[in-house]
Image (cartoon, rainbow, N blue to C red):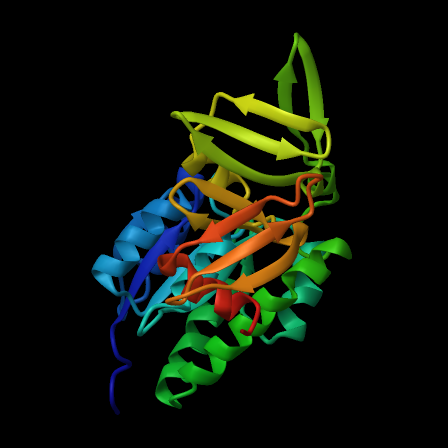
Length: 269
């Protein structure tokens, strides 16, 4: 009888005890090798690109990039790993994942549930079903915005997310849909919103990471826009574009060639 192939695994969770627990449970399986760990989305992407594991256990709720954003980026890789999502929110996860036939494990971890997930991975690999599985992950990611509105993927408190800005000694709480775009000018980051323009003591990179799962898109090295606040898309030359925003000035934001290809994918252009 043939032994199952060795599975190279990366663990991604911003809680060290959760990673330790999964590592402890998986250590009992002879065909599993833990070849890397990450405590945030950005590190996970770097490690996965370098190691190219077979499987990742990927936490949904992390402090920088959430699991769906990481998964979306992984799917752009030439040979992405299989993904088993980790979540602490059973009532939000069950329908979302099972409707899309995507595997997940709940916190606190059950040995049986974890091993069942590994068995599913073995079956997917043995039956050459990886392409179909990754298509199902893609479908889940594409549906996540609607599912989130139904409180299926994230706890209900997330809908109260506010981004605060300050001006003239006053603090203004903003919903993300009130933000048109953020840009850098003279080494200062500015936010253009329905309540006016604000200076923010943040790098554009940090804003991009914070808004990564909220429909924001990098157009060039000095600007991030809210995709829901785009009024027009004007094709330009050499795979570049200009975006007409919905702010009162109808600002035209250029999209560089680097990001133009991604914009085409987002809008099926």
